[in-house]
Image (cartoon, rainbow, N blue to C red; front, top):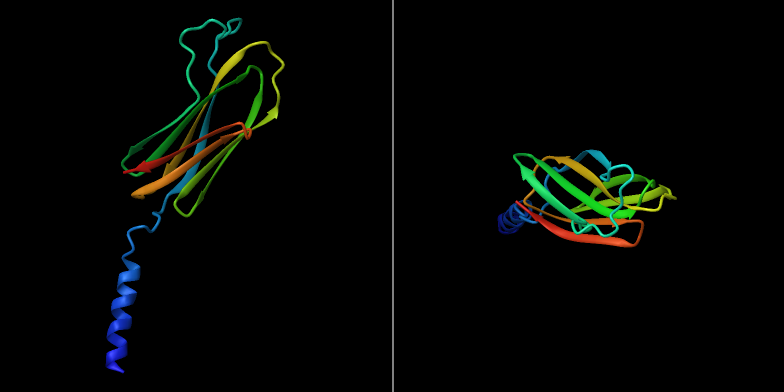
Length: 137
């Protein structure tokens, strides 16, 4: 009995120390930035057009994922986020297409609290824009 019990305890302790275990990260909310374009202007011929992007910052026990993308002005969007294992999934969908004749740079800041050593993230905007990366602490 003792010969079986010691290997079982050793195996159980190795499993509980798995370093690939996801942390306790939780979604805290989204700050919608809207369209960063002054009324009456357009990005046409603008040399400072921002690229579609997703970046992150980690401070203490919080994670912010910034998403910026170019799309037709006057559109309305819904945004959602979920955490599945070691992956953060962000989805931004058009709820009302814009009919204005210009391009806007829309921004969103997704906030998370908790800690984790590493996460993957995937941002999807209307099935046409996909950005993926890895967050390392």
